[in-house]
Image 1 (cartoon, rainbow, N blue to C red):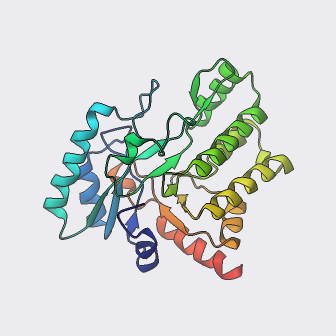
Image 2 (cartoon, one colour):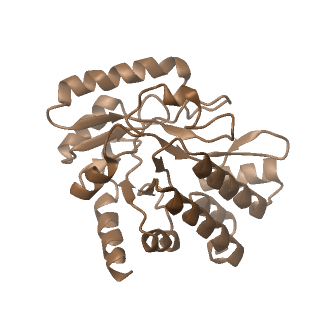
Image 3 (cartoon, rainbow, N blue to C red):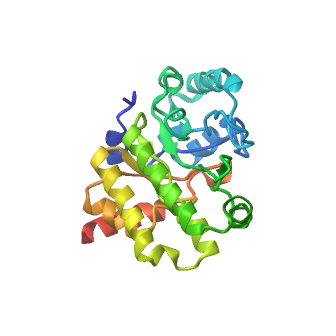
Length: 269
């Protein structure tokens, strides 16, 4: 259970953001720089969500040994800026199956305010965990190297793992719901319009809405896709509009326009 009322925050103000990255993972700004940029942009609620520790090699994820320092910095910033902005401690936890994810005791015992969970890695046929979340050119190279250009197999693995992540639980917000669509479309334009793809996406959406967790509209990745947003709203999902900021300049990236977009779309459904 989160220590904050996410629904109340989303319902009461657009001046929130629950997803951001800093020096503790692959972010390009310090936590202090992000907080100051958020204050200047008028935010009242700000959540830090470094990529969680993982039991595999990854240059994008924080290490376990840096977690205490991260929590200490949260407390320092709260003491300094707490009268101006509410600062929350979170992580974007990678789901790697039953043995690693938001559901394990390690994350339960960190006393985080809430948890985002996302799929960034899927397993190749040789057992290697491969990051399929990077830039399209990197994704296409990994698709060739690890998956023999089997784009359908990669997409199926992504959605299967995402569904299992939701069913396993232990988190509060699902991050960039169908992010695979960006890279899959770079390799195979139009893939998101194919019936088999839409069936996988709809199954994930239905699983998410039945679970009652919050859904992120990630304005950095422009996800979920339009069709997924329509299905989410039809099923009364609560959507958190997050910038996924990695720099101070992008704390409010595309958020205002996407909040308007979602509200307008909701009025037509």
